[in-house]
Structures are given as C-alpha cells and as structure tokens.
Length: 211
Picture (cartoon, one colour):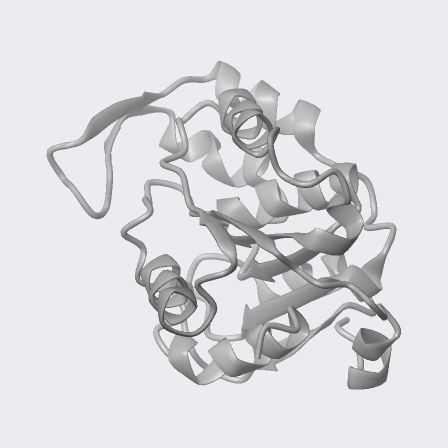
C-alpha cells in the first residue's frame, strides 16, 4: 500500500528537476487533458522547465526506445534533474524508465500487468483523441510488454502514485500493492482518466518541487 510521507519526500534533498517527460496511456496522445494541463501550467509558471510529451508508437519496445532517444541530450544527472510522469500504460512505461534512470516518477492509475490486460485488444484500433488515427496492436507487442516488466520498485521514495478506487479499468488494490511505501494519494472515488486531476495537480507539483 502507499505509505510515503512529506518527510520521506523531503529526504530526497537537493533534487532540482529541470526536465520532465510525460508518457500518455494506451490509445491516448499528447492531447490527453492531463498532459495539456501540466504543459499549460509549466508554460505559465515554469517556462524554464524542459517538457516533452511525445506521441508514443503502439509497440512497447519502440515507445521505450523513443523515450530514451528523445532524452539522450538531457543533462547527465538523471537522478537529480529528470522526472518521468505516466498515466495508465504510460505509468507502466514511467516505472520501466524510472528504474533504469533512477529518477523521480509520478504514476497515475498505472498499469501493473499490461501484458495480461491488453491481450484482449490485439487487432485494429483507433486513437481516443482522433478516431481517424488507426493503428494495429500486434500480438508480439504482448511479448514486448512481458520483456519490459521491471521487478519490485527499488526506490519507493522517488515515486508518487495517484490511484483512484473508482478506476473502472484497473484494480486499485493491485496498483497500490505495486508501489509500497511510495508517496501518493489513494482516492476514494474518481475514475481511470482522473477527471478530477486539477484537484491533485498541486500535490504532484509539490512532489516534483516545482511550486
């Protein structure tokens, strides 16, 4: 279960996040309202922060490769200057990268076992924000997800998990158990898309030390 505290967050010390990577969810895009809300806040209040929210390819292997290639020119001090945020499948990807990079991560209703959950979506699909955008989710993408799955998180104090009991797609108990001792909020209601995200944005910004 979530167990992080403000004191635990404070122990991260002199981390000064300068670069943020946002990874959207399955069938989503940079037009996700959460991504746009964060981008707009940063543009208005922290234009000094480097922000990147790429359109992820349907292949999990290619999505992670894109994230790594696109951040190759970022500062070398990943642990202190980088943070990765992700929603749903993007939360799974954010965990993969945070474990590789040792940086801060914010996960929002994160997928815990997407190889299990997405096997039912193999075939032709369309994007949520643009129904004219068609793509194929291939069977071998499930194997890619299995190969990417990291073990238990190694630095729970570097994670903030925003999890809704009202999530209609993912089990909040499973999500909570995946991020033991991480900082975060377990919401009594809300939904998979976190339609009340604006309420929780200040807490995320505090965790990232951007306020």
